[in-house]
Length: 475
Image (cartoon, rainbow, N blue to C red):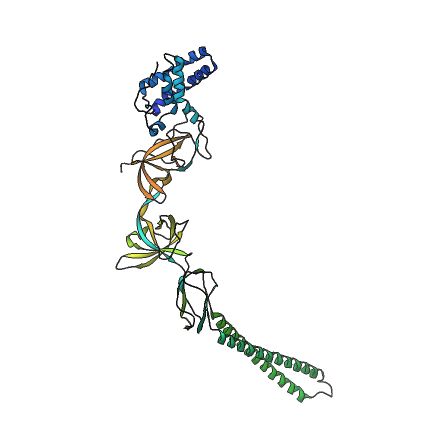
């Protein structure tokens, strides 16, 4: 039997062949142990059953020649190649036949002991709509010119174009010497009026006390009605003077507050966080109230704005989720915030604002940067979908590995439309299949897999059959 079943060529074992071979593995392993321990009688008894493997190989297999390239060698069990090189040493030996079989298929049993950890995602039915790209742009919700709020010459410019500032930071300072003097004068006036009010209040209190004493003397001989009436008139006059002083004090405090406000506005501050994009004045220039000093844009509170064809507005209800593609290739999500009810008569488009949820980007975000929105076209319809990470490309074919009873079941699939992170499945999968989305790059059909939270099938014990692939969608 020297060299039995070993001829030049190239072939691999399919699933049907492995099903015929695996029942003989226990005998082959026992024979191997007997040979090693030097008990040829027991080895001969086991060799008869194990020899079926060699007969099966001779009838159904062709193994790679020693000159096969490394890519082909990886497709064959390394032990089979070793068996060919040893076969000539065991001419007409039943033990040699068993050893050949053992060398050929022992790695398959060993591999079954080491399942590959994977992550899965269910194949689900979900609403799916056709999509179309629409070009948009990033816009800042907070941008514009920061104006002077008082009059005066510019004495300081604290920022340059490109500087990032925070809310409240000083951008420029106007000439505030006059404003300071006006504030001081208003403060002095307020103090003087306050002093007059205090004095009027003290005099009124003294007259009130004198009137109280006259009232006690009303029944005595020392009582003078004329003097009582004089004091009552004085009290009325002091009350009016005190009321006037208090009103003047209110006015003086208001004037002081206005002067302080003007003084504070002599310092131009950033109304929000952002980046300086332009300077509209320079040191020495005179600014009137309301004239621009700098331009500021908040690049961290961005929205996406797009002119969407009116025919595609139906699928853009507020809150609808859409995909966003930036020029650097990164993908993000956004939600419809508002559809402006004003249609452009020339282009038949409507302005739509989206609130983005940006993740990491390759380039910094900027206002007016381009963005491509993937918008739904028409109403969504139920469709069988699989996560895009489950797709393994092999030439022109799309493959998906499904975790089925602890093993990787390879399926050929036919894909339809794409929507976000999922593909429509037209053929090859069924709802509820556990598609492998992580660790599927180097899987082999039938390879044991370890799914978090699931039990793997015991080696050598086939599990229950999984769900059959979905029938082809001929529609």
